[in-house]
Length: 273
Length: 233
Image (cartoon, rainbow over all chains, first blue to last red; front, side, top):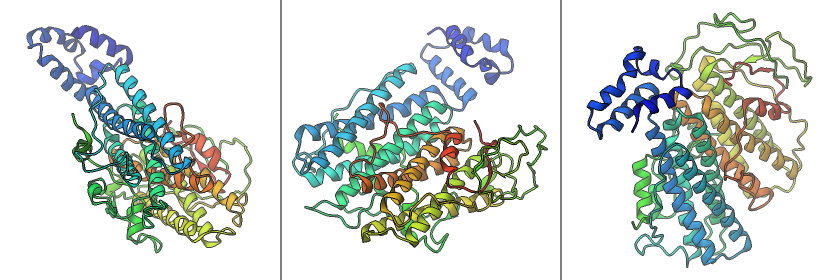
């Protein structure tokens, strides 16, 4: 690692890097001398803390979010691609919907991998997935189950991206890409919920494209809807904020985020290794 | 709608037409920069493209307040639209369609009232809308307009995220935009099943628009003159 080169590269895009780090610009330029005194393994740590000081976030934070998102997109892409291969769709429309979604998820995988590489990071490897979750689900032989897991993955994806937006604030371009994926995931979720509502073999007349309270008809995926019954936003109570707005409207009108721990606990059910 | 472009506000805050009242601000707006000026809401129904420089029109305020008022303006538009849709349902509406459109109305009212409360003294006033181009008796006209509004809302929030400086506000915008995307998907499916997300780009990314692009579209439906030149660019 050549610290001098790193700083001169940063200086090209951010001429004020030294001022951000320390008003004593010359002292900062001596950092490379300090670096020689540090154990090699400590240098990335030292650099990371310096970036934190300069930007509030480290590039590692942004890369971490991108790899987190990539893991979710891997899961989704493989799920839909497998579904299309197994082809248990009852109608051309349902296969068409899955094809639309599969194309998006595969595009998201490719985009995130290239973004991570372009940022100097290494894309995480695709896990080995087990969509039966240890034999508990049969999505590729039972069509209603295929839709249930798809809905769970999409509603989780929406909540996962939402939970990481603030980490990306320092990088507006990456934030914008994440937001544009996030809203596509919400469109997918809405359509899948509507498909389940209208399923001839197992209709769910109470299921809407939006999430009511923390309601969900499948106990096995309840973790996906934890906290969706929140009625207070930014200190403002939404229920009865107007005569039309009942509790269910208040909870439907705002989607909640999940922490990465919550998301990974859901995802790991389907990750074999 | 007429978007007036004015000269930049002087750094001392004494730009013509931009008042800087000493508003008592709630904690919610603690970090949001200068409060917005409440100016007279015009009711100019002409949509001339005069580019006069007198600084009139409703100011959105500055910084995060401007972005939140921008969202507030769009939510006002959507809420007014669906209120009309539910009040005078189109010919042949099904019970399911009316139920779902009523839900959407309630969500948009919730969003509108949330912004109104959150912005408090910095909120822009109620906007006058113009739906003369919409035929509320026609399913096609209503759903086409709804689709335009929902896709517009999604693109507006997606484009505004980068300008938000306060983390809590970004989270709130994120909580709303995914609901708008759910609306957009449903409306599209009502028009043509399976078209819920068919307008993404090659990377599978949703719409994104700048405030200027959004106002160019929304302007057809907003009569009140809005001075959008304080929006972050």
